[in-house]
Image: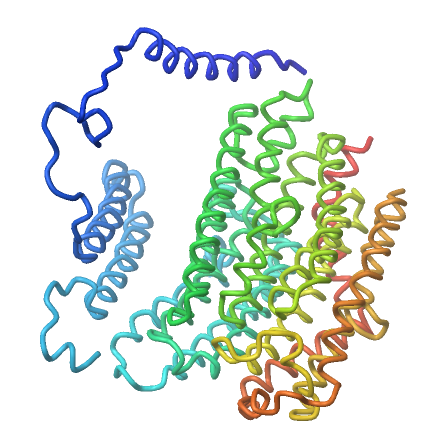
Length: 125
Length: 489
């Protein structure tokens, strides 16, 4: 059993990490300015707190977008081989899209995409 | 019927059931009972159970480009998983309704989780195994979070999610390394390629990664740290499910991978599994000794039981595989049963948590107390219960393969385990102290009684006439063993 390729691989990983950190440590300049310790130090003095509150709905919509966006990739895969796959492929894609549609209806009905909560919704919940 | 579809029929049935429940949930009135959805899930699971049994009549073979295989082995675990899911649904029908929001989701998630676990047991392609593992894991992460009002619920879910994702990453990396070493991810093909010439180191590292990933999922030491916290915080019916069904599926996958893909590397993995078994038994049983919380105690007990099951893996024989499968069934029967009692007595939230809270349970409700005592006796491994034969077959298989030390350590551990099981048993049958706690226990409902009857009957049958289940387990083991015997030559 040959151990050395793996050993070389790990050694190379270690080497690159050490070199990258070490070289910048040795050659890099050192400043002690008032802004050195601040986050995102890039010449502009930062303003305000980064801890402002963002509505959780943004994250929800973003997450849902990513989910459906990724599912669309599968449709692309089917589209490029659509003719070769024929009717069975078409039916399977329909099932796939149907499951996605079910998920979408579920999201709509549970109110995951309602941006404003109306008085009617509040009463219902 | 389409032959390909027939090979994944139980999964298809459960998927359709889950999707229908998911669509029906938001259409129902906000405050109406979700029990009809639960009963619908029960029906779907029953259909999947019978579909799995029907699959036994199919000739063995693969479908969908050689990714799924139905054989006696996959059917055995399909039926086991369907049975566990059925009992869990019955337990949660009453305990969850009204105590959490969007209960329909819960039933749908159980169905989806079952699909993932079933896919794992019939998959013969590592990538499909991974997809099954993810489906089942993600469902259980969400189900662990269903006690949203208690701080412990989300804590448990987050811990489970982070460590679980970490474990699946290991598993996936293992698959990638094995693919790099052999050029395939089909389990049988890996076995064929590795027989020719020398074994590449990459494959060994990949196997180790897979062992780590599955070790997390089955909570085998030294990958067990998450278990007590997660089991403490998750709702009891869910713990009953996730301490049995995903573990059974993961063990089934591990057996298939070890015996079919890596029989030749057994001199690498056998010592590793040996140590995992010994560590799990010792850590589980010693850890359980000091626990005051019932669910934490049962969590440590489940670590120990994973150890007993792994002990059967090291046997490298048909007997060992059969013993492991049989043990998975007995452990599932008694553990789902004891969590049915715990979830009814303790409710969905934090009612009876400590061992001493259970004092006098048998006086307050002879039925619940008696059932709990019976399951505890089975967990100890006293004859005429399933637990006895489970342990007996495991240690017999280990002994036949010359694992004398493993057997001795295992037997010492079963002795240690008596202490904490008996402590709970003694509490159940001693004079009540906190009558107000016990008065809060509602009358057992029909679905719960059904679940208790099912689990008690299963434990009894396994303990008195284990022959039939054992012969099914042997038939399943036979599909894996040809690979082992070629390796041992």
